[in-house]
View 1: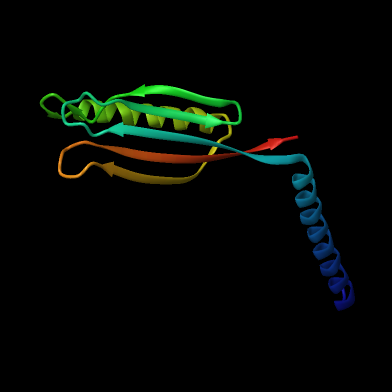
View 2 (view 1 turned 60 degrees about the vertical axis):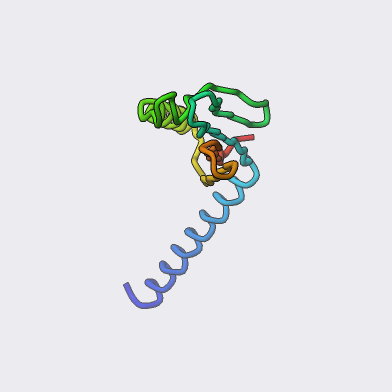
Length: 133
């Protein structure tokens, strides 16, 4: 092969690659859209264990409410409850991942009411999924 033939093959390969990338990008943008889902966990930090903790799963079709355990019991911090909440969160995220959802972002916040031992620990998980139209 001479230089001109090698040059022509290189140009041809570059054009084919460019065309393939452009077509796949165009096809994806025409046939899919992005959907969002949030999981919000609200965990009670009430020292007596009387608070309520919840997991809220929200999307276009509404919100599902699941019970969670409070961080404290009548005698102090309850690590069994914290472990139970972690298992529920992981199980929910794994189930959603199997359905094609991808964890995009996580944010946390704490609300407390001054010097007493009451408050909320809130975590929001943002998930995205590419949907074929």
